[in-house]
Length: 114
Image (cartoon, rainbow, N blue to C red; front, side, top):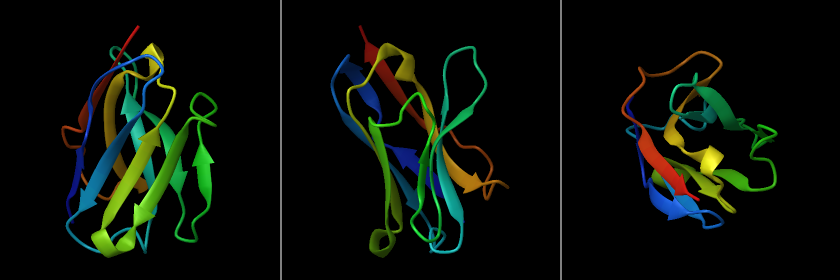
């Protein structure tokens, strides 16, 4: 299976952006999935997760601003990001939890300007 993140870009503080994770197969029904973020000079961190049953979990830093969702018909996972802050800047990637399903790809760059 392959996972491809896309949809990043340059936005200003307070704006919204939605990134997508397209899977080459039906992976979301059988795995706990997550969106990860790696800020410049920092370790990769898990910011949002969705279970097979649809339970959602968020890092405290994004709770109330980010929403993770899955469209199984399209084999695509989304991360809607509202009220973006400069500290949300980073490379966003998708993968399984806790064990990775795929090798880390390039991810998609999100840059929030102040």
